[in-house]
Image (cartoon, rainbow, N blue to C red; front, side, top):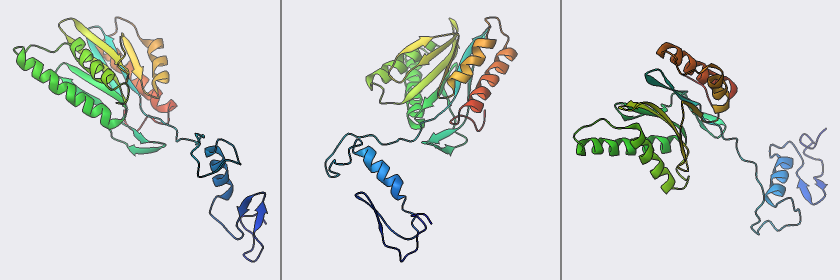
Length: 237
């Protein structure tokens, strides 16, 4: 009979200095003792009332798969729809492709509220800029500059990793934007927790002279690769 199923009349057992209650218990005594030891930086003699920078296990952070690529004459963006809260699926139908301008869209990975409100703010600023410049078409590099300036201002505390894509007078463009504000202009890119699996598909199948149908099919394969190989990606594509 184990310590968790001992009879109620049995004397309480003492394991060193740790008190183990008798009787059938759901209190996870050994797990709690381990967590307490880790919080004390593995020093059993440390005073529990004194703050000590120990280590506690954290929930695995998983998130999303977003991709973007250029083809002959345009851009294709793709994303899954799964939003996670720690290790739990919080939303199976989260929209991750955000409107920036009529000719520019943006995929967002990271904190859902941060990506949504960041893209809404830049979209509004671009609308005002178009009104002040006679209604001319927004340029993709302008949206990229506005986004990275805002993210750099907050030094990464706004958790928004973005794939920006669009077409303007200079042709199709795809940019990757990191939460700290660094950017890169690439023919294809992936971001999020499923980005490695998606990037392997792009590196295998991408070419400069792809048609629209071939580009859409390649993006579908990349998103599905992220969904199958990453627990934080999936639901719908």
